[in-house]
Each structure stands twice: as structure tokens, then as C-alpha cells.
Image (cartoon, rainbow, N blue to C red; front, side, top):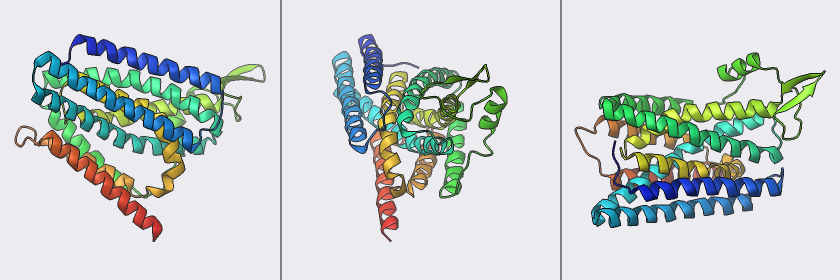
Amino acid sequence: METVVPVWLWVVFVAFVLAALFVDFVVLKKQGAHEVGVREAVNWSLLWIALSFLFNGLLWWAVKDGTGSSQLANEKSLEFLTGYLIEKSLAVDNIFVFLMIFTYFSVPAAYQKRVLMIGIIGAIVLRTVMILVGGWLLAQFHWILYVFGAFLIITGIKMWWAAGKESSLDDNVALRLLRRVMPVSRTFDGEKFWTVENGRRIATPLLMVICLVGLTDVIFAVDSIPAIFAITSDPFIVLTSNVFAILGLRAMFFLLQAAASRFTLLNYGLAVILVFIGTKMMLIDVVKIPILVSLGVVIGILIVTMVLSARVNRS
């Protein structure tokens, strides 16, 4: 897998991510444990979206300056935008599972921010590894594209049938496994991950939540990473669009937490997006669907889903 992006833009990207995480942790430490309101979530969401578009502009300029081709710069910029939107959309389903985990464990609102922050760092590391491995596999074995495509179609169909149904963690295999591996206290001990009970050091429910959030992201990454490989094989764009979507995940969580009941049909839309992307991947050697068309389809599906959700909730 090759990229037309210059080395200096890789350096800028890494430096930006490290700086963003550092600032986020400094702000988190100064604010302490507190409940994130809608206004704060909106401000952070707008900031992350603005930074993502700013980076996309820098990407366009770097490709144009390095290759002298405006057409190639436009193509790479559209690939980033489409990949970012797909990852952002699929993250919604991820967030609904986070909501279910927090509700199941009755995690106080004041502690949720720290859990998500640590989860984001874990997601960046794990997805980077998975993207590099996935990219190497695609470069070595082209037929894996068809496997990814079929997997996305099957996942989309399963998501459609599961949409609207009540879900529970009671029978979750990962949760039962974690409870067997480590003893867990019945109560929280502030934001601590470990506490002492009867002279024995044991995990708090917050550590259990962190582990489940991490496992959930790995599971969803198996869906979302093949989806972006259907848009581009450029490793830089695959990685950066994923990371920028993840960086805004925490703010997006608190926004959707406040408006979860308004998007009752969103999972149906996400299911259709997965099936579309999987079909695109399966037909990649037969029909080349333009990136602009893919972007339009994804945006169109999301708009239709949200409009229908609003109408259903009003009726």
C-alpha cells in the first residue's frame, strides 16, 4: 500500500493527535469529575469537526503541492471526507452500546468522561494496529476485499434485524469472562479502578466498564475498518479519517446521550450503509463507484433516517 502524502504531513498528524490528547487530559484534570452538559458537548463536537475539516484542507494542499495535480488533491480530500463521515456514522452504533454499558453498571455521570477518554486512547492504538494489519493483508491478498465486503453485508443484515429490539448485557460473553478473571467490588470508589475490601485489592466496577468499552471498540472496528478500505486503499487516509472520527467520539457520546430517544431509526440507516459499502467492495473489480457518489449515498441515507426518526417520534 502506497500513499502520495509527504512525510511531513505524517509528522504533523502525529504531533496534532498527541497535542489534542494532552490538551484533553489537562482540561479533564482541571475540571475534575463532573457531568458533561449538552452545551459543553456541542462546543467540543463543533471544535473536533472544525479541526477535521481544517486537516482535510491541509491534506488537499499537501497533495496539490507535492504532485502538482488538483484532480488528485480533490480525490484524496473526498476520500478523507467520505471515510470520516462513514466512521463517524458507524460510531453512533458504538455509542449506543456505551450507553447500555453505563446504564447497566449505573456509572455516575461525573465518571463517564474519564472512562471515554481512556477508551479513546485505547481505540486509537488498537485501530492503528488493525489498519496496518488490514492494509498489509489487502496488499498481499486482493481477494480479501471480497471477504470484507461479504462480512459487511452480513453485518448490515444482522444490524437491520436487531434494530429496535431490546438488548441486554446479562448474557454478554465478555462480561461473564471478565467477572471470572477478576473479582469486582459492588460499589464505586470515586474514579479509582482498584479498591481494597477485607484487606484484598480488587477491581472496581469502573475498571470493568473500561474493559468492556475497549472490547466493544475492537468488535466495532472489525466492521468499520473494512468499510473505509472500500473507499480508499491509501493507509494515511484510512488511519487519519479513523482517528479524527474517534477524537470527537467523547463529545458525540454526550450529545447522543441527550438525544438518544430522537434517533430511533438510526440503526436501520447504519445497516443500509454497511450493506451499500459491502456491495461496493464486492463489485470493486466490476463497477467503480465514484467517491462522490459514495459520499452522497451515505449523507442521503443519514438525512432520510433522521427525518423519518423525527416524524415517528412526533406521531
